[in-house]
Amino acid sequence: MEGIPPRRALILVLVVSSLFSVLASSSSSSSSPSQDVRILSAERRIDLTSFIVRAFLAFKVENTGASDVSEILIAFSPNEAQHLAIVKASTTAGKRKKKAYLPLDVNPIESPKGPNGAQLFSIALPTPLKSGDTAALEVLYVLTHSQEPFPAEISQSESQYVYYRDSALLLSPYHIKEQRTFIKTPNSKVESYTNVSPSNRVGTELRYGPYHDRSPYSHSPILVHFENNNPFAVVDELTREVEISHWGNVQITEHYKLSHAGAHHKGVFSRVEYQARPSISGVSSFKSLLARLPPRVHSVYYRDEIGNISSSRLRSDSLKSELEIEPRYPLFGGWKTTFVIGYGLPLQDFLFESSDGQHYLNFTFGCPLLETVVDRLTIKVVLPEGSKDPSAVVPFPVKQHYETSYSYLDVVGRKTLVLVKENVVPEHNVPFEIYYKFNPIFMLAEPLMLVSAFFLFFIACIAYLHTDLSISK
Amino acid sequence: MAPKPITSPVPVEWYPSLSVLMLSIGLVLTASFFIYEATSSKRSRSLAKEITIGAFSSFFLGFGSLFLLLATGVYV
Image (cartoon, rainbow over the protein chains, first blue to last red):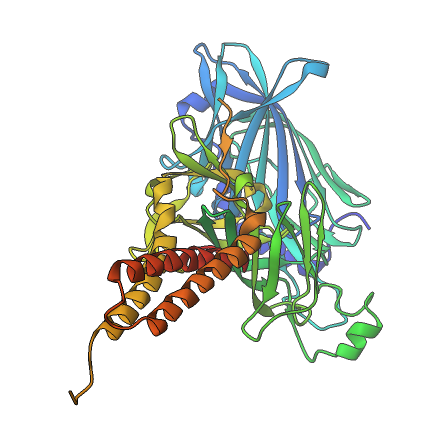
């Protein structure tokens, strides 16, 4: 099984490697500060068991220069940077049992770029690294749309194979003394992989390395062709509306445009075969999705343009609610579906008053569907009528703007804060806050409108009975 | 200071009974308003009494219909 891949794959490797050949050869010139740091050991574990590619990078840096170093750079190839959803860095503090993970700030560096457009990110160290000292860092980065289906079209009975492109060597602006890369595939069906000696495959794991003393920006393209039948569920567009009512409810409405981003379906779809032999027919398709909703959810609905979709189940416990939804048809590669999920939540779980008298909504960002990529996520927070100065506190950069929306019994409209983020992965499901000022007296606006409407009716009756409309005297 | 959760001014569980109670009071007052209008003659009618009954019944009808909206899930 191990060894040089077949000729077909080899040609593709050559094509890919030609793209990066310039990158691989360029190791001569690099900026001066990076020479003061070198990586003693680096270990990268790339998890390909789902549609989302997660890579854990653990490395040890040493300051070989004379001055202190306060930030460490990591590099991504232009292709990776384009599909990069999130980068998180942490360092360990304390020893053994009291070990704690300390999150670190990661910021992209717009300019200068590395050679061949490599995108650099800087990790701010908690304490500057003194000359001769070492520090251990851990980085998690998540890539989306990085597994390319090959063949690009499959029939119902075929299994889905994908390509994953990466480098056997860690792209880094520093000299790396020793490095290894482990790639975990969903199963042991690996069609081919690029051999960069020493490399081998054990079961579901591809091992590259150890490689010793590689110069900065070394690159060695690899291509892995393997079976991946996990659901390639991508939400092309998700709009979540969060409507706050101070009368005791937070109403969520989520509009989904879901698609299967895997190998496109070729030929006819046989429902009989799909139902009769689920183990071999349509293995790359998916027919149900799980949404994790907050606890104490009520009035849940799941519908589309036609009406209610009855194939959903809700399970609730004290920590979470799980909504299992089945679209009207199983989704094969390239197929799409749209639907709406709505639910109500108790106000006291999400709305709080801060010490300075402001109100704030504490809600979870991201998509409730498990293991799903959202290409474009829009969160609209509809504040009650009469609220002032809304501002958002989100732990990562998002685009935001304001709108005015109208709902029941509105006169001036509700202030709406719109947050837009592209390329959202489950790692983005973290709480965010919306702060705003609200005077509870505005809650009386709606009942007073109803009261005055009824009162006008009575006045009209009185006026009618008090006027004499008869013609004859 | 720990964040203080914000609750609705009236417990959510009270909405259905509040709406029934207030709407029935409102409808009884409306009925008495029209009975008064129909039974009193044009000269014996007092405008102050008419407006008072009308104001009270519209107050109860207004809040009753608000609680009816809230109880049915239309959170305004």
